[in-house]
Amino acid sequence: SSGINAEYGGHGQFETYIESVSNVPYYLRSGRGEGDSNLDEASMSITERFEYIYNLAAAGQQTLDLVASLLEKIKNIGQWKNPYATCLLSILLIGASVALYFIPVRYILLAWGINKFRKFGMDPNLIDNFEVEDFLSRIPSDPQLQELKEPSRIRRWTG
Image 1 (cartoon, one colour):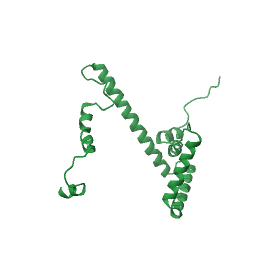
Image 2: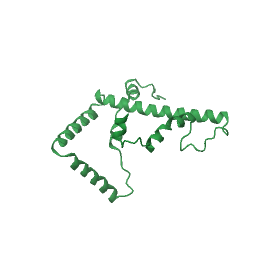
Image 3: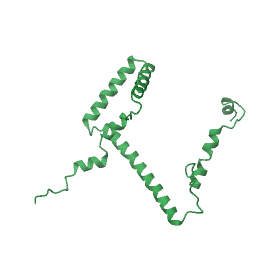
Image 4: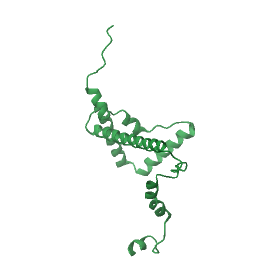
């Protein structure tokens, strides 16, 4: 214990981030955070509480679905389910590794930063896209692959 205190200043100083992290169980237990100041348990009816819990569970389920979908897409890249995208990613990674071998990282970061500022300096209302998200949106997840494999259940209108 004394070795840890010696590393961080030696006098057992109380840091503010420790206090905020230590209050997380209280906020989780009470169901209140800084943004939930309008929730008063005494004024909530049973149906309001049920609706609040239902909405919270639905949001959690959507988040878990998004995470599972992203992980399935990454798995499908590694399994060559979309050969064009996997080949493109492989070429980009090989090119990036060759570039990192010859060009120092600070120059690459400098060029990236200048390019970002240049884009927003020329057009301040520019909405920048996230290239990784665009790439992953083109990769099918497991349910999407299953839908592609199954024959179409929609019958053509012959009338």
